[in-house]
Length: 329
Image 1 (tube, rainbow, N blue to C red):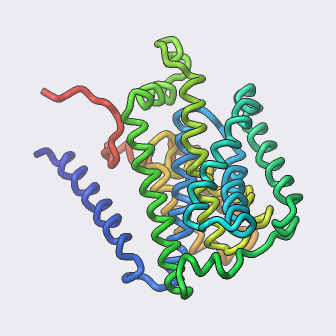
Image 2 (cartoon, rainbow, N blue to C red):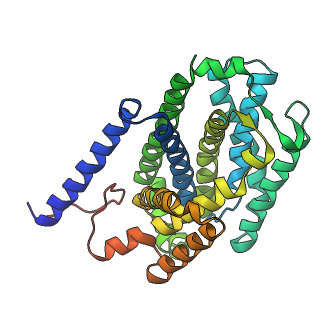
């Protein structure tokens, strides 16, 4: 076996060990660490979905936070107002986000390039404004989840922390596997072709519009589920938190850009780097965001495909292979 293959298998084994260790998180980490990991998994989920849209389908959206907020508000409405079972309300919130994505898609897909990005942002802000006007949701200041609903996820704070950790980790794993399966399918071949050269893909017979529609509707329920997890983590809904542009879109774009857009490994690497930087730079106050921006610019100038693209220059292997390659002789 060649040294390159040995290195590949070693990295994959290390990644698998980390995944297995995460399964035993409540027994390995304290409550504070579990809260950070819960946020990590949520942002990783959002980063993987944004990478699918922007890195493969060429849908540069700046309105991802809109569907996160929809999932959060739908979950609150189904549980606190309609009195549905909280566990039933979770998939219903994902379904609601998907249904709203259909008319939203019909509007924003009439735009392209920078206009599309602005259009998705405007759509998300409209959703936020509507959420702040809905009766029963606390208006602009928001409202907290009733205690009875919170206790459905654990009778104690420790039990709830463990539950939210497993829910967020499960969603991240589900998203990773779903996107991997999509990229390995016939649709994935078209997405890979679009990523490499959109005009050539269209000339070769790839239905660009159909694939974009599939990807947009593919990520909508995942974003809705992420909104549910954000609500459970914060135990409240509010336009400024549930529809947060900074938390659910800007930070996510930063993660994908520095990690490596258009790859499965990029969002994972970017999420790790982001949380490490946040840990050591958060004490710098306003300079924190400036430093993050400077780091992002530096990475892009050195390698437009991010840190994973930089690693690929030194023949780093694909840890999560999605390409269809001919068999070697």
